[in-house]
Structures are given as structure tokens and as C-alpha cells.
Image 1 (spheres, rainbow, N blue to C red):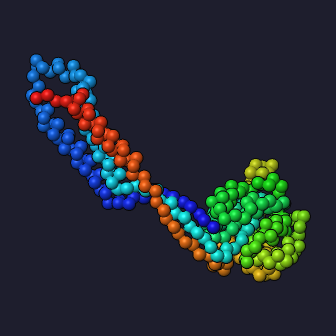
Image 2: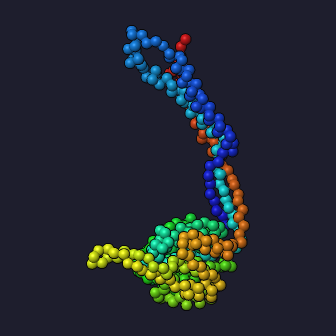
Image 3: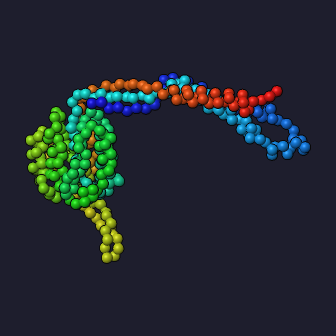
Length: 334
């Protein structure tokens, strides 16, 4: 598998220090001009300053052309290059499906800014570190949906994760079995030696077309490990509710089904984790990253395309134009 990216580099970056000559030239030109024009204003000639010709007004134009030309030649001397970096990734990667609960309970704010947004941010960091792996994304509430099929294009995966919002599937509810079954279906035909599902939910199952126990048996049948992350807690929080007396605060107990998530993980040779804060959630993804290591090798190749010719032509053009103007339009006669 090859990945390619490019940027601009300079073969001789030290040559760019010569650009410091430009402000020195400007300073010399300004001081030299100030000395040459120093004079005492005479009443009989003072009116002449209002009758300057266009040649007088543009007398500094050749100098600015010279500065631009020299600057462009210095850039050309530094040899700008377009550097293409190719990464050849070989070996045994892991096929991973990130399965997100996006039901209404995932908007609870016991994890800032809320459960779902915290989960999205940490999951994107996890994806960025899984070089060589194929990753997909499944979301579920009362129904499940494959948001991104498994792919090596991690930029696409991260973009899809960032676009997840609660209510994306419209129907409310939490069908953990359906979400897990859809994730396993994404993996059952792949040829990777290791297949895993990272299931993130608050663990409160309200049924669905496929019960969690059936999805668990599917995972065992197809050799899929399930890492479950229970997010949230059973503590009480205050939430605003509407009443006949206006908006009031009521205590609400956050539900959490730990036994279900433990069962899904243990019986599929995965692991169960519990995240109550964003930092703990990040640590959990780091643990999964260490437990499921890809056996891949990355070889990097750099190739360069010279880009100095444009700067060289611009520099020569301005230098020639400056000489032509000095010898014709702005020629000084003794």
C-alpha cells in the first residue's frame, strides 16, 4: 500500500539569508537620495514642485524592479523543490470498526462537552495513530448504519467521525445488538488476521431487531474481538425541565448497564473498559492501541521536482526590464 504527500523544500535554504541584502539596498537608496536632494528652498523655484512630470514621479521604479529581480534570483539560488514523500506500508494490519452509540443518552454532560463529542475527539486521535490498519465506522441508536466502510484512508474516517451528531438516525433508542451485528458484518468477509470492534455506548439497551446475545455469538463465529467502552456513570445530575411554574431543575439518575458490556467483551476475547471522564476515555483508547498492535513496516521514499525555473525567469525578466528603463525612459544625460 502506497501513500503519497508533498510539500515545498529548498535544496540550499542558507541562500535565503541573502534576502537580507534587499533591506540594506533600500536603506542605501533612501539615504543616498536624501543627500542628493538636500537643498534650500528658494521662493522663486518653490512652485516647481507642483509641476513634476510622470518621469519624476516614477523615477524609483527601476530600483524597485532591481530589488524584485534580485530577490527572485536569490530564491532561485536556494533551489525550491516540490518534495513528494511516498510511504510503502507492508505487513499485517488490523481491521477495526468503531461502533458509536449516538442515542439521546449520549448527549448527557457528565463528560464535557458531552459524552458523544468527547468520544468523537478521542476516537479521531486513535485513528491517526493506527498506520497500516483498515478502519470503518458504524453508528446506531434504535437502528444501525455503516457510516464509513473499512478503509485505509484515515482522513476520510476522521472526517466521518467529526460529522457524527446525536439524532443522525432520527429514531431514538439504543439497539446495542443491531450496532454490534452491523459492525461484525463489515468484518466477516475480510482476510485480516485480527478483526476488532470498539463498541462505545452507555450500555442501556432498549432492544432492536438483533438482541445483544445474538450479536455476541456472531462475533465468536467470525473471530471478531469486541472491546467495549462503557461511557458515563450512574450518578445523579440536575437537568432543566419544563413545569407549570416554568423551567425548574430536577435530579436525574444516569443509567448504565455494566454487566452487558462485560459479557460482550469477555466472551469474544476482548476487554471491557469504563470511562467516566474524557482523560480516562483517552487512556482507554491508548490501552487498546497497545493491546492490538499491527505488524507493519513503513518505508519512506522521497523524490524531488525542481521548481527554481519560475523564480529564475522572473528574476531575469525584472533585471532586464530595469536595465532597459534606465537606458531609455529614465536615462540620465550629463
